[in-house]
Amino acid sequence: MTDVSTTSSPADSDKRAGVAKHELISAAGGEHTSIDQAIGIRYTDRATNQTFEYLIPDAKAGSPLTMLALFGAKTKATNETSRVRNGKNGGVSNPAEELEALDEVFESITNGVWREKAEGGGGSRTDKALLADVLIELLGSGAKGDRDHYVQRFESDVAYMRKVLKSDAGDEYRKRAGKAGPAIDSLA
Image 1 (cartoon, rainbow, N blue to C red):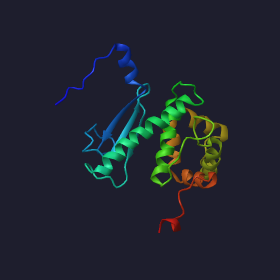
Image 2: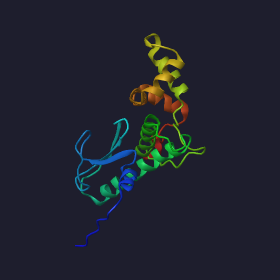
Image 3: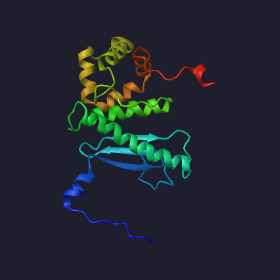
Image 4: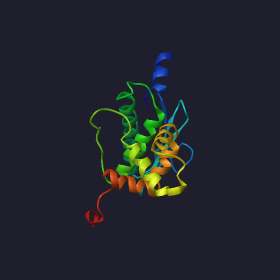
């Protein structure tokens, strides 16, 4: 077997550590595993320890398609977060925006929509004001603030916004924003 190890300087190691840790997983919240046992990926922001996980629908551990999909998912996660970081943020990490972008792009992929780089550079594609309006409307008298309150909360608490996007409010938001998945009759 050929030795492919290389030597590097401490500066090289710092660059390679990067802003995120990528892992392969066999279950949500599971331990890092080998590619032939994995069915999903985990992206962890090193600065905040916030994570994003994606389990590939209908994945079968060890199948060639799953292993290729895992490689592609890791690559897509890196490309998407880099797009956000290097776009409007000028190379400065904003984990909340980066993880939000991952949620959006992988949700689109799950719905059969491959999304290329957005015009105008990085940043979130979620219209936070529209999402806040939808949430307030659905919460009715249970709302704890106005549009500005919820927009600010979405910006400061990405986990909360992700939760809202996964709820009925997220479904309604996607309809109003024109981000719904393909029509059911197109799937026959």
